[in-house]
Image (cartoon, helix red, strand yellow):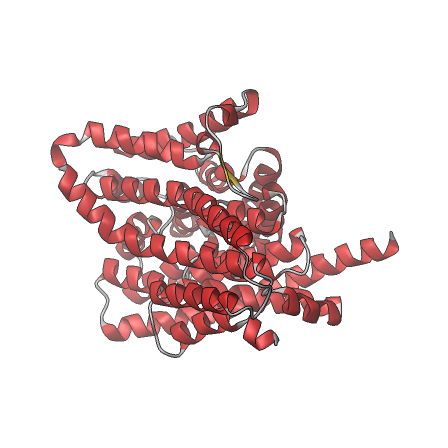
Length: 471
């Protein structure tokens, strides 16, 4: 029975892994298979009332995602036609930093800063040309993958927000625990980047541990005390400021859009702390709600408007709309179908047998099992969010540690997935052979990340379990 109940997830995995279908096709068939099975009363009997709840919650969760994703892609498209990212490249090269410090600045500073504010691998647009300017080509491509896997935007951002709403875990708890579980990955990948650049030695290993610990600590503290929306930004800025100690730095004016975005996100957070913004507009589903005034998508939308206004002579509405539709339609359809499948499985009783199986397993199997499932979900869907939607509802109960294990493993696997490899290959104009080598290298990185998340997650979960037992 558990195989039949898991059929929608199995369909998704087989279509992507065996038949090499794109995520959008797999998500569509996954949602359809869940709907058909529910209509055949394979799990709980089909109910119009539950169907209404499924649709309303799917719509609300989709609005939450789409508002950030759509505005983020709009900003990325607008910035493509400005000198912003080129200015970053020129700026880094004029700093005259030692190579190891320059690499740390990119790997733990600029790249995760851009990824935290925009997502969708946009940091590669700025970081990859910089890496190619002072490193051998193959080394630069490998470090680009390594860098991208350090700070998945969704891990402490959008995916944490959606993941927490799927399983009723506080967002701050899920994101902060994810930061803690991912801390060994951050340090390891930073060291690996320096190793591939031929710069790693015992002295620099201490710097790697120090900078990695600084990043992870600020990430954790910001998630707990300020908010997940700015956690990646604050962590990246802490590294950037540390790299600039004792140096005069003149940030190029052309990068004003990123500065404005940082201010807008922070200002929105401050206003939300003093005023209840939900009274302005709040859209509610059966079990979920969407508050646009609290979403970072609002800040991104405002900045996108200012970027458009400042460069309006360069754009036409038709060009923007065509490019946006080309880049946004597939990921948005994919996310909607995954959300629909997830809600059918959660509210239609599909996960009851799986949860019963988990309840029959010793709890010490939970952490490694969910690490593996999170990795598979993140890699196959190509996003932390997709991995969370696919795997998170299977948790036996709302548990921040297990949720964070899924969140972290999905995040570090997603940004080594095939869509990201394709993005790197297109930006670097890689050959087919180079792209295949990158895909194999990414799998190796994902495997090592998975082991680190499993070890750290198992350790933390065992501590939680022992506290509960002793209590």
